[in-house]
Length: 407
Ligand code: PLP
Image 1 (tube, rainbow, N blue to C red):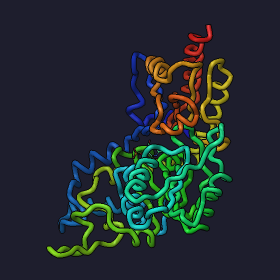
Image 2 (spheres, protein in one colour; image 1 turned 135 degrees about the vertical axis):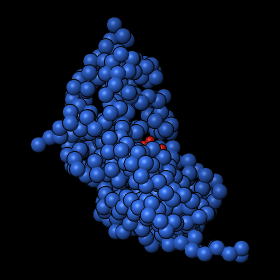
Image 3 (tube, rainbow, N blue to C red; image 1 turned 90 degrees about the vertical axis):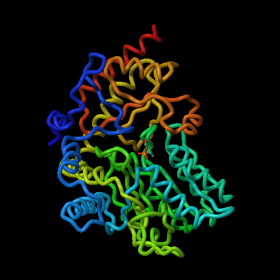
Image 4 (cartoon, helix red, strand yellow; image 1 turned 90 degrees about the horizontal axis):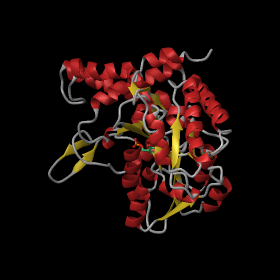
C-alpha cells in the first residue's frame, strides 16, 4: 500500500497557501524540508511547559527538559543504528559537524604532506574546512573526478589512495545532482590504507536507510532541517574510539570534568564536544520529526520519492529544450536541469510566478558547476508530501517556458 499523500499534507500547514495567486508547489526540499504539525507543537510545548536549562538544575523542569533532550539522542542512535547514544553529538548542522572534525581530528592527526580526499561532487561545507586545514598544516587536498553523468569514478579514487591518506570526506548523496556515491566500497578501501572516513549525510539521511555500523564510517554528519526538523540543528556521529582520541572542539560549560585556574580536565563523550547551553527546544522537537519518519517508514518514503523522480523523468525528459544535469544511475529524488540556454535564475523566476519553489544557482557547489561547464542549474527536489499532480504541473510550466526560446 502506498502512502496517503493527502493525509500527510494535512500535517504540514505551510503547504496550504498560495504564492503569486497560485497554489504553492514546494520543490525545494533539498534546501530544507517543511515541518509537520507535531514538530511545531513540540516547540510550543517545550517553551510553554518545560523550558529549563539541562544537565544542571536539580528541579522538576530541568529534569524533564534533560530527559527529553537525551531521548532525542537515543532516537537518533536508533535512526542511524549507532552502537550507543554517546556516539551522537549535537551540532548546528552538517556544516558544523564537518568543521568540528576538521578542527579537532584534523588538527591533531593531519600534518604536513598528509592527504585528504574529497570528490568533485562536494558541497562547499565539505571543501572549505579542508582548504583551511590544508593551509594551516601543509596537507594536500585531492579530488575524485566524476564522469559526464555526475557519477564519481571509483577506479580513480583507488589511484588517489596512498599510505599518506589520513581522511576521506565524501558526500553520500549530492545535493546538486542527486547522485548517490558508492560509499561502502569507498569506506572499505580507505580503511585498507588506514584512513578514516567522514560521510556528509545532509542529503542521504532524508532519503536513504542509514546504518552507520553496516557502513562502518568513522563520522557521519547531517542536519535536522532536511529531515522535517528545525533549522540550526544537526548531528555528528563518530565511533567512540575516534571521538575519544580527539581533543575538544570549543571550551566552556558542560564539556568539563574539573576546572582550576591551572588546568581543565574534560568530560566524557558526547558532552566533551557540547560546550555551552545547547539548542534544547529544537533538539527536543527533532524527536517528533524522527517519529514522523518512523511512522511512515523510511522504505515507504523512499519508494514514494523514487516514484516521483521516475515520473518527473518521464514527463520532463521529452520536452524540447529541457537539459537534464546529472543523470547518475543511482540518485535520490533530485532533478537538476536547464532550459535551452536560459539563465537558471530566469527560469526560477518564471517558475516562482507559477507557484513553484525551486532552487536555482550553483547550490553551494561552485567547483562542480565549473567541472560541468555551466553557471548553475534549476533544481527540483521531492519529498514525502509531494504528489504526481504537482509534477504534472511542473512539466506543463517547463513546456511553456521552453517554448519561449523554441519558437
Ligand atoms: N552538505 C550537503 C550535501 C548539503 O546539501 C548541505 C546543505 O544544503 C550541507 C552540507 C550543509 O548543511 P547545513 O547548511 O545544514 O549545515
